[in-house]
Length: 101
Image (cartoon, rainbow, N blue to C red; front, side, top):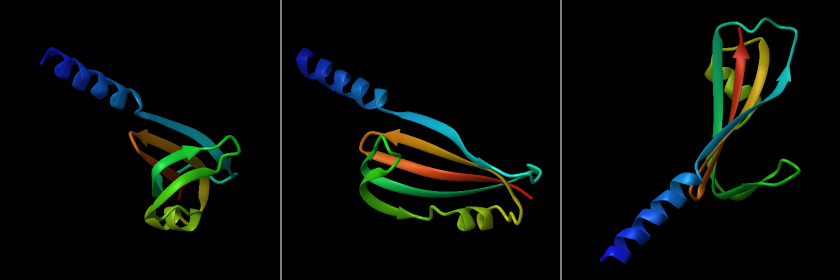
């Protein structure tokens, strides 16, 4: 019984240790930052970020494009663009974050 509990605990620790979130700047313009923010997200099953920035995995859908993210935030003048990568066991989410007015 102790081996089963220890094994379950070890598996839980490994799965939780695989969770992370990273945000990096992608682009900036001369427009003022403003108070509006819009996001566009897509998800992947078994997703991996390759060294050249391409994501490999099974796409699960979503809207990951600049115009969609700006529209979601009601932004007409884009100031900054950031990319956030969230990883959880077996799932990778890529989010485009747009700020502006």
